[in-house]
Structure formats: C-alpha cells, structure tokens
Image 1 (cartoon, helix red, strand yellow):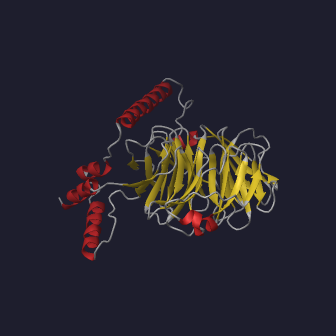
Image 2 (tube, rainbow, N blue to C red):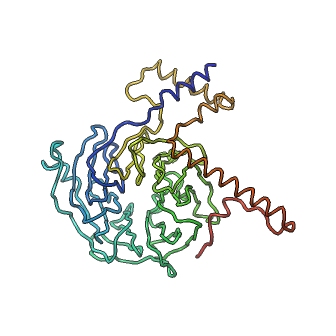
Image 3 (cartoon, rainbow, N blue to C red):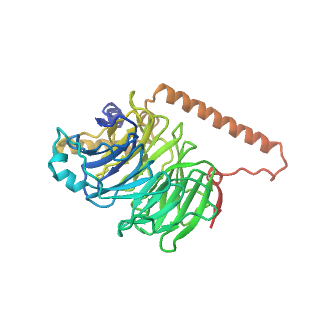
Length: 416
C-alpha cells in the first residue's frame, strides 16, 4: 500500500513544464548549450535571428537580429567565447559572444539587441544545412551538397570529404567528442556516413530504409551514435559493427526530427513531428517520458542542459520551452527529512515495480487525442503486417520464407 501511494504521488506531482523563453517570431531551428556554462544557451530561428538566453533568469542576453538572410540552419560554439552559425544564405559566420555580453549593448536586459558585425564570414557555394567544430584544433566542418572542412584562418575550405558515389544533400554533421578526427554525417538519400579527417576521405557508409533527420554521439560511450529517423524510430549504432543497430526506440507516431544525449549518457531526449518531447532511458526501447502542451507545435530542436536536470525544446510556434528532466522533481531547497522520505518512496517503487497495479499507474501517460489515435492506428497496422507475414510464411515451402529480426531490416547496404 505504501508503494502504491508512492507511485500515485509521483504521477500527481508530475508537472514537467517550467517556463517558455520568448523572443523568436519564427520556428526555432536549433538550440545549443554554451560550454562550461550551465545557464546560457543559444537558439536560432527561421527568420535569421540568433538569441542567447539566460536560463536561471529566463531573460535574453544578446540578440543578433539579422545574423543571416533567411533560415539559420545550424549553430555550434567554437569555444567558450565564439559562436559559429550557418544558413541558407550560403554563409558561415563567426560571432564574438564574450564582447557582446560584456559590452553595454548586450548586457542590458531592457535592450539586448546588438548590431555587432561577425568576426569572420566564410562564403560557400550552396546553402548550408549543418555545422560542427573540432574539439581541439581551429577547424570546423559544414554540411551542404558536400562535406567540407574549414580552417578558421582561411576563407575557403581546406578539404572535401564527400563519398565518391554520393549524390545526396548532407543534412547533419557531428564530430566525435572523444576521437575528434572522426566525423559522422546523414544525408537526404537515406545515408549515414563516417569520415576521418586524417585520411581525408569517407571510411564507411550505410544506406538505411528511411532517412535520418538528426544524429548525436554518446558523451560516455565514444563508439555509440544515436540517429533520429523518418520512420518514427530512433536507433543507436556501434560504429565498430554497423550491420544492425544495437537498440531500436519505438514510441513516436510521426517522424523524429531532433535528438540529444544527456551529459551523463544515461538518457536522451527526442522531439518529433507529432508535437511531443520524449525522454528515453539508454537501452530501454519503449515507454519513454512524454511531454506536450496544447500550444506546442512540431518540435524542431531539443537539447539537455549541462547539469542534466532540464530539457529544452524549440518548436515552429517560435518558443523555446524548459522542461524538467524528471517530471515530478521538486524545484527549490529540500531539507534532510524530505530527502530521506523521497529516497524511501523511490526504494518502495523499485521493490514493488513488478506489481500489476503499481506498474500500470507508473506507465500511464496522458496523450493528446490526435497522438493517441495515431498510436492506436499505428499499432493496428503493425499487428496486421505481422499477421500477413505469418500467413505468407505458413503457405510457403518450409525454410523459404524465414522470419527476419527487426534490427536486420534497418540497414539496406553497407559501403566501404
């Protein structure tokens, strides 16, 4: 009974929404956290504006209103004081964040707009769709119709790393955090490619069943990478063996647009076209935490804060929302007795989690009607497909039509 009361209290106090950071008037395309600073993030939108937010104060620190002409495709911090941005105007721009914050223009909360010029502009030949900076050297990589490596001191790319038979538009790119010479990209022709900037070429390339929309390297397991796919699923791959994913995460009912790992590597967040934000435990492929609001539209970008306590989401309604990573966590000061009571309730839930009533309450999540109906329809379609495969196998010669595992269906071909 105490365990049942504890799990009921957990659901009663599950109020994850914290605040919304206003300022953008178009969809928020990307969110990045400032390294070594827990409370500062940068966001960019479709109208070409970049804003630096202070999370504890929920205020704007600096706004670059006309950073790009058109949509800002991607952001990344070159280091603590400099920010890289790229857009559909075929330019990469390097911004000095520190001077903008310390100057009188950007530090005022009443008027955070600054008209500072970028430190450098790197013109390209095509619209950029992704950017990431090297962890140790003054190099950064961009994604457009080719993958290019740039030096901060030069105005032209120093190398192209595109696969020899590639015809896709590269939509996302990320450096490995532990081995910074390794680079991964995803493309519009359903490809996932690994590069090595030391050899200057693409090493391996996967062709998948459906296109990937975002990727993220695990911060604690260097060979693990997470892909957000168009087929409503997320996949983790071990780059040492790419024949099949190590785990499939199924819960979204529409295309998954963005994903990001927690700094602890124990969980990650995803946002999708179904207007929900979901928090997954690493290695558990179902029943994630689900966040949604009535006004939140399609989620275009998601990120964890540096302390792993909060989740950020940017949607095409122009808002950056702050959520608690643990929905029932209490904000504020917790005394010793209250902390002991919370630990006792957690121990009770863990001990009795196999009980039917307790498991049902802990798994229950309220979903919007449209998402619930889509989930029911999707489950019906999956069940019908399984029945059809079973009947086809039943009426063919034994051994001719063997069942195939779900993980074996994801990768179509591997090219080296």
